[in-house]
Image (cartoon, rainbow, N blue to C red; front, side, top):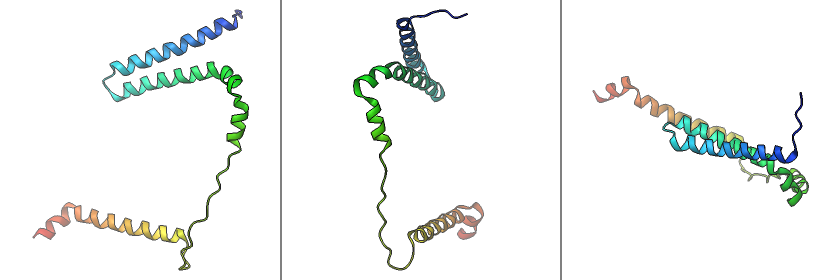
Length: 124
């Protein structure tokens, strides 16, 4: 059972849903006490913004020629520059591993000092 609906009515319904989402999200954030409730308000606002973008996409596509912009963005490539030569025959990954081991041993020594049993033994 399909009910015919005009394009204008459909766009008005979309706009009403966007407005309702913005109002609901703002009210939820405004009266929320907990962070979880405020996050839920943010979800409502995010959904409303997404609905607005879906509603405005045909206009934006026609106005700003988004097909050209999106294809240009899609063809961008990142060209990494080679890193500095370490000269000692070591690769940069070995240096990073040694640095990680050094900081890991520092953390281990600090944790050993903070253990309750070892602190009492040092003070005697």
